[in-house]
Image (cartoon, rainbow, N blue to C red; front, side, top):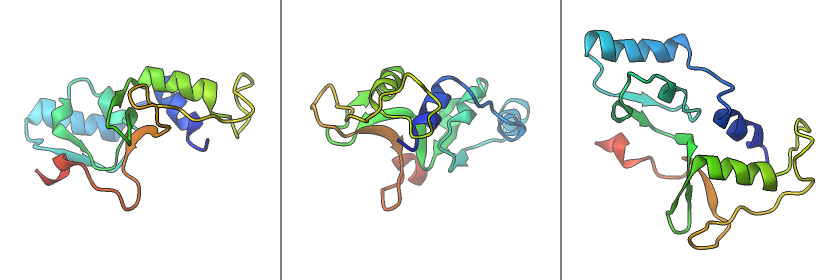
Length: 133
């Protein structure tokens, strides 16, 4: 419930890449000196830098715009997930009059468990393999 506006705002591109993101992109395009970019941000704004190959960025704490089932590992389409958030998660900030008044679980289509969430690393979770390679 707390992340509802952040998840939906990410889908709606409410936030834009900043000059800092563009600087990373320029390091790659103009100098070819960027080996790898590590970020702790989960906002995914660096993906708006179209000239920066995604393989150059390591999302150390994951990204809000990639979703999976924590039980079976099935990937979930971000747009589908946002539709589920929109229809099943209440808006505790009262910004969306169409939001449900009570939240209900978002189930995985593959295993039917209510363990679907963005691929973000929480305290105590393992960092992604890309971080170590």
